[in-house]
Length: 290
Image (cartoon, rainbow, N blue to C red; front, side, top):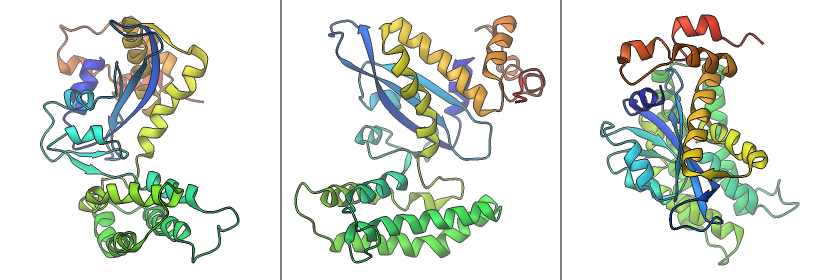
């Protein structure tokens, strides 16, 4: 079933990704204290059925993303944070996360200066906030993706252009929080206007951050995986549970459904589609009515 999710996801034009550390005690040629990673790959805000896949990898090397999306069409849009490992997706169109950029400026605002509009950190924060205000207004008005595309060009493109020009004029003491915010934003320059190309592109990577949270919260309880097989199995369960939840299902009911239906590698994609969380049959028997 997860292999089917994977195949569907690599066929999507709008995707997103994130990663977070985990500990795996028994990895070949590695100490138990070594830092391993959960990689999250999911569908974007494209109006189609949500798909969420988690994978364990021993490192944070960007090859994990490149391998996962091998076979994806050139020109696929991916929304991620500033991690350079995603640069290995050579033929992808990368969208930056303005929530991350905004967060850096927010952290750089001196205490008590939140309303001081002459402070550079406040100004950087307000540039980002303006873009999010436009996005909320579009959603509130129920605009179509095509309408969002047109409005972004009219409303937001001038703001982004002004923001980039503003960044070029700023200076900050080395090692300061403002310097870090300016450096982060400057490093995202190549990706800061990509989302303007299509109304289905997201302005932030919040979808992925929300999807990675069950792992970050869960590891406070389960702490670590004992073996790599255990890490792989855990990520499979997370993939099934969170994809079910994202499609409005009761995750436990969906797991019970799959254990009874027993999908296998000999089934056609048509058969697997009938067991997917969005299929009418599954929706009828596993929908979360709470």
